[in-house]
Length: 463
Ligand code: AMP
Image 1: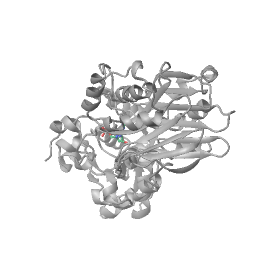
Image 2: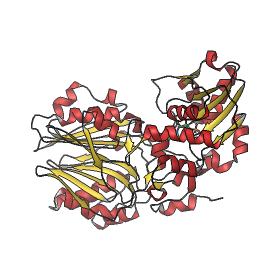
Image 3: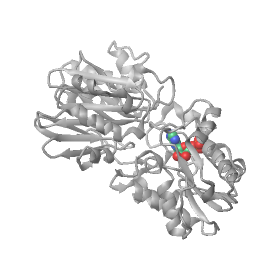
Image 4: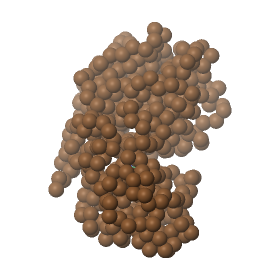
């Protein structure tokens, strides 16, 4: 089964002159951080669907010619980040069929697809070789080709989607956005005056195309846009449980999640971390760029220890986490980050990262800092220990590879050769996010999975 951490972006143009695909292209560019393996856009001119997809970054997948093909005022797009299984061109999204006049883009993951595959099999449709998104598509396509409208077809298939999804569907003339009943992955609605409506995984991309954020799609809600305007239907009783890891790492700092500024929340993680560790004596606070920067600023503000940049990030390397071999991951760290001896030499450093997953980054960076002359390295993490894998569309390895699941904090400190190591407490994380605890999914830290993970439960160990 493929797990995906992805971006979706859709535009419904109310102005006949709008080239929706160009706006979607810009939106996908702004959401590149959520998926870098492949990208695709499907558009409609009201009569036909058009598609362009490819492997690689948004900057490489599209050229000017694509936009001659991607005609029309309605379009959806997707950036994909597959984590298990091969990264194959055949799985590039949006999932679509020109014959069926239907397309779908999905962010999330269905930990179990038994219900879906049984349904498809019972209708004589083979689910073989399909990932979760393709099965979701086929279930909606089944009802849609039977003559239901697109919103009716999505509503009918919705109970089969046993998992996490912030998804977009489109037909020739209708855009549908739907979010699982816990709202684990973000999805927001925006508007551009005189141009149309936008649906985006993150609010930052709505701003990038000159739009204005209106509201989040509610958990369990289906929102649909057609020539009559925006309509909504609650398909299931929803309760928001946004994934805390969106705040910790995934989302861009200039996005808002459930009304909270990601940047401000991350700064507060840092302040909280400083309050929880008042006895550290250090000369300088250094972030691991980019995701450690806001927390390091917050830590410096609260502790009074000066902030500085001590590691330079190569801007042309993306998220290195998923490289298949450990040796590659290690060399990736050095390729990505280079220390500045002028800032580090002879200093006692507070080094801040957003998370430790396998421990590869931390181990390599502590070494780098020492080689650059750092006298002491105090490693502070702006999230609690990641002890449990994610089954909701985020790229984390098996539990056995999660360092905090197999080692104690003193053991990790020893392994990464830091002078001290501290994590943000779970209580501190929740306080800093500023949402009620019952509205946050903390499964990576607690192993409490608000949406059934089915047979995956057997793989999880609680200590
Ligand atoms: P590791 O080196 O395995 O401990 O991974 C931790 C580093 O990877 C941190 O610097 C995080 O910023 C980053 N990270 C955390 N989660 C992910 C993820 N799912 N995909 C890519 N990078 C991640």
